[in-house]
Length: 305
Image (cartoon, rainbow, N blue to C red; front, side):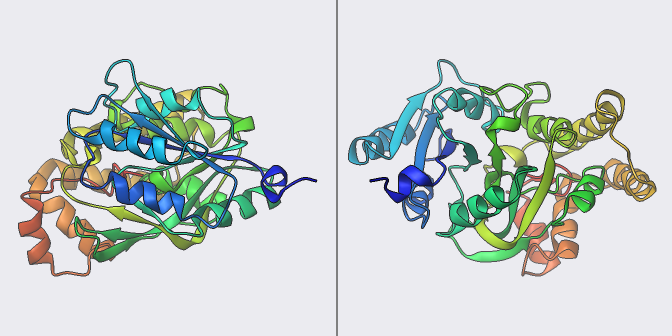
């Protein structure tokens, strides 16, 4: 007799890990609490120098039927994208889900995503909305992006409208079944890669917040924000040329405004203003300005997805 896990599609959750000892146990525990039963968890240590690898090995020993811990041969250090590529070779699932080592997946995340993907076979990439939490796990804001493909498509000319650690990918649609990201733009590789994916299958975001996205100042996407912004501009222009991406008039106008703002303002002012306007921080603008001296980010242009 078939069990329910034999019937339900297998989901491979891949978690890139690099020096995340402060948060990785909470991230793994959130995956172990998922209501969807047929999940394998692949933990990929990207040559951490803290206790991360030790923690991953401990979880693999305690949950051998659920968790596999592997280590990259050398550090890839591209916001987890290289480590994610490495993990794909061990994945057996019909769907591949991303999870970052400093975030928290809510219990129904995988179940909600699988339900949608199985009932919408033309969807390639599926994200969710997200709460934003601080280093202590306190909710300080939210990330909300468009739901349907057409709106997401247009938004790609403005920002990365997918919460990256919430993403689930239909493996059968991948151009290369054992690789997800094009390794061209370092921490921006997901933005570039998803431009390519836009022309392969449909994108969708679930309306529910199913992940807590942690901002703690050491996120890979929070470093060198101006450099990452100019990378994102080059990626958009490259997508027009290579993938025949069609920028809307609105996107061109927003891009021009972004270039002026980023060019004129000091880095420490950009993020607090944006977070305030987007409702991503339930604090005053002044507090975010002070906070940003430690946490430098350009989240509106280089979303950690």
